[in-house]
Length: 255
Length: 204
Image 1 (cartoon, each protein chain N blue to C red):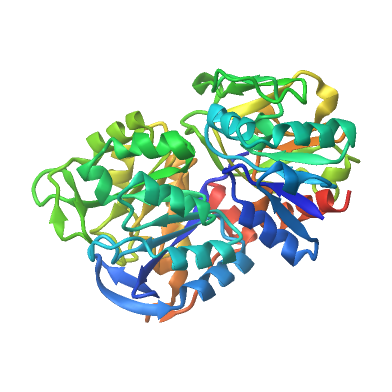
Image 2 (cartoon, chains in turn purple, blue; image 1 turned 30 degrees about the horizontal axis):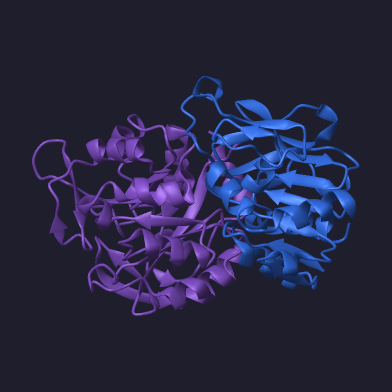
């Protein structure tokens, strides 16, 4: 039986690992390579690494860092941050990465999804949407550049378009719930899950394993991703890289 | 010594890393001269079927590869799309496969998947290995591997199936025809079970 996925998401800034709250106040939590080594030992399902400076600084992805991460990583690795061209995407794959995550570029040029997918296969192209709830009405909007830039685009419509254009996976990243550790935005997930047929991964809000269990119970085959849950421990948010054992994960699968 | 074929697709370094940990030496072959004399071969692959076949056909290595596989009968294993390439043809493309194993590659039908199940088939799934098969040594029905694919290998001859997996339907996730092996999942990214399988291949 295919199992739902439990996937750590690591944010990189100035070559260090950070964790944000509502995409702000990055707190240094350690060294990326060291974290990868720990997740190897814990046998994490997958790992996502996002360089949160690359697009903001308008620079190329840090290929050396990606190469080092891919070399160390013994689980599937997804890299995101600053990818703007097909050539960059192909170069990143050649470094040993399984999936690439596209975000701001797909809002400027949605068709790049098709171009990259035709070269590397749909299954390896992930689209991450950074989403904020609108003040009025039950509506949502996609933001880019670390939640500083509004796009006016509705994530539900955009997810449908991305699937049509050849994306292999959608990641919902809730700006409102990021770092809050109070659970995922179930309403948002529900609205996107029911309009797409490709795999969906949700990020933003998990504070305890129970939050992941709720998602699996509600949505079945889905990816539950988190930063805070896997880098902090306890109510004082002490930095401690952690990940559930398979026995602990099994309890999340059974309703 | 295991030779990994580099025709432009697949995570070559991930295989090198696993074998380095196992103290089994590897080399990468990018052309037919580097392929000559190989004792054991890994054929990796990701992406679209026709793209993979085109790259392999244009690599200049195919003839040498077939001499090694059919003349010298050395063990070879296709991984993911590398396994699908062993088949005669694929629903995904127009080009012929290698045709080394009597099989075709089919697309999962949405109507046959579990309810609300997404496609691609992506994530960790357990396999049902054939007891006594040398590639499956140390693995059982609880062994989980990482899958990432929308098309599956459909072996014509049940006797060639050495493991199956289920995603709504049962499909062939590992095949063996004489010295030719293939696995649909990614052993190079499947933690201890993947290491076990690659060790089994390395010590054949």
